[in-house]
Image 1 (cartoon, rainbow, N blue to C red):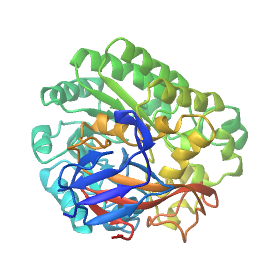
Image 2 (spheres, helix red, strand yellow):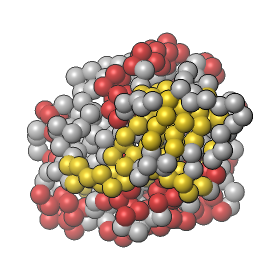
Image 3 (cartoon, one colour):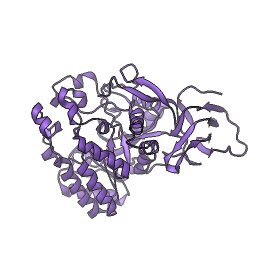
Length: 428
C-alpha cells in the first residue's frame, strides 16, 4: 500500500471536531497523522486538495445492490463502483436479497463479490427470521460469525409480537443491533401515499401516520422489555421522531435515521402522479419534514442514508399504486447532503457527520473518522462544482430518481478505501 499525503485541503472530521486546513498522511492503509507528518514519512503519492474538502469516506446505511437475485436491476459490481465515484466507501446491504441473507453462505457471497470489485466495501445485515417469513428465528450466532453487523426483517412483517419479543431477546444475547422498519401492516393495508387530503383528492390509497407511530410504540415497549439495542430505519413522521427522542432521554439504547428524499420532498409532489415519488414509507407532510430536520439538528436522528433502490425502467411504467417503490440514491447522496448545509438547515459539520461518524456509530464500525490509526477511508470533493443529475451522469445501473434534472453542487474528486485510491486519478 502506498504512503499518501493529501495536502492543501479543508479537512472536516466531525468525530474529532476538526474543520480547518490540515494535511492528511496515510500509511499502510491507515491514517498515520493529521496536520504534521510523522517521523520519517515519505509520500509515494501526493494528492493536491487545494480548494477541496477532505472528509471521512461516506457510509450509506441502506443500499440495495440487488445481487444476488435481481441482477436485471443492478449488481454488486455496478453499485460498488457507483458508490466509489460518489465518495461512499461503505454500503450497508439489507437482508432482502434472493436468496435471503439468512445463512453464512449468502453473507460470504456478497462480501466476496464486493471484494472482487476493488471499489467500495459492503457490510451486511442478516435476516432476523428465516427467509424473512416472520415465523422462526434465524441462526443469528452463525450470521454474526460470518460478519453480519446487525439483523433485520427488512420490510417483511413478523407473525406476532411474541415472535418479535423472542427475536429481540435472542439478538440481545449476542449484542446484535436489530434494524427495524416501523410499520403496522394492518394499518398500512397496501397504501402508497400519506393518508390525508392530497391522497384523497388524487384517489390514492393512504398510509396513516399511525401505521408508523403504533409500530414505534410497540417496538419501544419490547426493546425495553428485552434490553436489546435497536435502530429505527427511515422514520418519516414528526411524531415518531419525538417518540424516539423521549425513549433516548429515558435511556433506551435506540437510534434512528432518515432517508434523504424525505428532507427534500413532501406529499405535495404526488400531484403529478409521477412514480418516481412512490416511496414506502410515503412522503409525508411539510410538518413531518420539519420534524425530521429538527431530529437531525438535535441529535435524535443519527444518520442520513440514500435508501438506494435501483430499478429497471419497466418497474416504474405502471399506474402509481402498482409501481415498485424507491429511488436510486447513491449518486446524489453527497450533493443532497451538502444542499442541506447550503440552505442553512444544518451546519456543514452536522451534515457531514450524518453520513460519516453517525452511521459508523450505529453499525459499530471503526470508520467515519480520520483519527490516527483509523482505516484510511477518505472522500475528497469539490464543494463548488456543479453538475446536472441525469442518466448520463449517473454511475448506478438504476436511473430511477425524482431528482433527475436537478443541478447538483458538490462533486467527488478522489475516494480512498483502506488507503487505496478507488476513484480518481493518482498524482505524484
